[in-house]
Image (cartoon, rainbow, N blue to C red; front, side, top):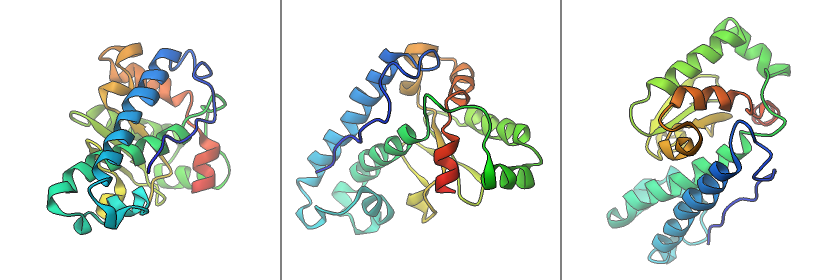
Length: 195
């Protein structure tokens, strides 16, 4: 059965950008709920037990109609959040380095132009969802708990959760302030490694 991934940092180490309470609720309540509900659905799918969450959300056509939406939502929620925790770090922020920095500059003209475009897409996504940086350095958005894997694309190298549950405790309904705080903890080392 699926479990929450272990965080690489303590709940209080993202302060002042993410409060301890916000991280406890987002990780320990919201993400845990996706895991619990996914495990509940999987009990009815013994033929798919043992498959990875990546496999499940990449092969939704193999899921019986009755369970497909639940796997899409709960499996996607688990997968997306599992990535999200890796994409942030108490030692994050700043700008990327190495090959990733060079590639971003080449594609967007500068890091600032990339950051502006990523922020624009994060602010303009209607409702709940995610904004991702793909290995080809395209910026894409997905609604709800969809991910690039649903569309046969590669796993992203970075992404932001723009569901209100990701920021309402600290930032109320101000997505812009949350996004600006998130830039201060982006884990560029992880992004460079995945890239």
